Image (cartoon, rainbow, N blue to C red):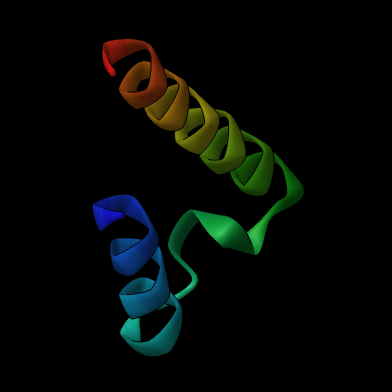
Length: 43
């Protein structure tokens, strides 16, 4: 739940950062997938 809240806050108030390029979007989505997978495996 914390990851979802952090993503929503970033979407509302944050800048684009690495999301300006296709490669940045791919890397950010892979990092998010690994974070969620790690949390699910921990549970």
